Length: 283
Image 1 (cartoon, rainbow, N blue to C red):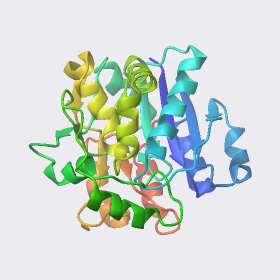
Image 2: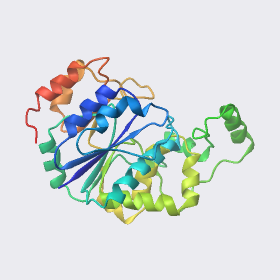
Image 3: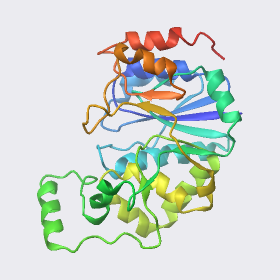
């Protein structure tokens, strides 16, 4: 059993290094995409760690933009190019943290071969608040001066976008764990389906649609499990999940989820220390 992690990061090198060291073991490779807007030199100590590879094709990542999808795909492409037979690939952010030991994480995936663990709710039936993302034009991926105003004009003058009729759109959380074969299918489909790729480029928050939708409309649908294995607290009702602190320790130590987000060591480092203390069984 070999695992790969793809971490999307843009800041907080010390927190990222702690995450990498926590995940590191001899059955795991870690790939890191550093936002092209960030200084790569700030992360050099992480690059020197064993089994760590920086994604060489970097994207300028913007919130809600297709650039997040492209950064993820770039990481997949680099993994595929190695020829290594990874059993699972887990997508994390630099503010995520494992709740279980590496041994328990490996055991879980050994017991669940060939599965795709991701959140996927049908847009037309369950996740209806996402419908405007599909039928309106968004220029989030093109952050030039005046793009917001142009976006408003386009949506006023042009008819609503028409999503491809032969595709069932699903999604929700962008964070997931999938197999190497599933990642290869995603990379190949986006590379060869120019129309679909263009549609997603003008979709707000396309990172919450693309991966789930592609697998849901493929033979891999039967392998999808509607659980992304993450503990995430949306109780604050904002556009981003609540930052977890020591107040969340009881829930984090009791959950069966493998990972949690999001954390900020500048806000509360003790919560990470508490998680580590509960997992004194390194692989």
